[in-house]
Length: 183
Image 1 (cartoon, rainbow, N blue to C red):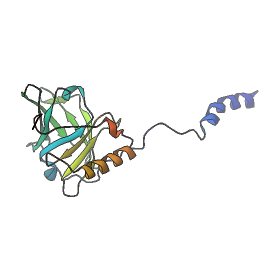
Image 2 (spheres, rainbow, N blue to C red; image 1 turned 90 degrees about the horizontal axis):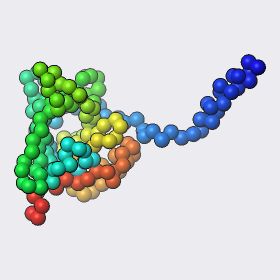
Image 3 (cartoon, one colour; image 1 turned 60 degrees about the vertical axis):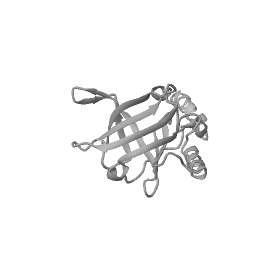
Image 4 (cartoon, helix red, strand yellow; image 1 turned 180 degrees about the horizontal axis):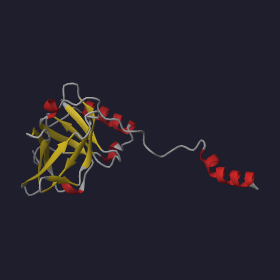
């Protein structure tokens, strides 16, 4: 009887042997992140649309500047269809210096605290910080950032291929126009 119960307990495990997982590969981040080099203006040339930027029609960018406390101020801006410029401020920081590519970001300040922080992982960087790829462990967020408003198609497609290898669906990344429609 004891062996029969043990067999029944192990039966589900036997069915799982050889079954492939649908989980994407473990997402790696950059090993080194020079915050000083990361500061400045970035253009979001492509990204997975989110509720907070669906009204953006063109000119998606972010400016990063160092704060006195060592954290980074982020000013995201874009233009709506009406031509109105919209801005959103956030703060980002590196919670664990041993994993410099795994940043946190918060858009919600309250009495000096940052609430509802989210993962902001730098998963790829150009050697000279000419581009960055930012993602999230669940792969529902992602941006391809460039120091220039446009990125060469070949480079963008190569990044897309690497994103696919990391478990992202590159078809979800929409290109962001940096100039007003019609220009």
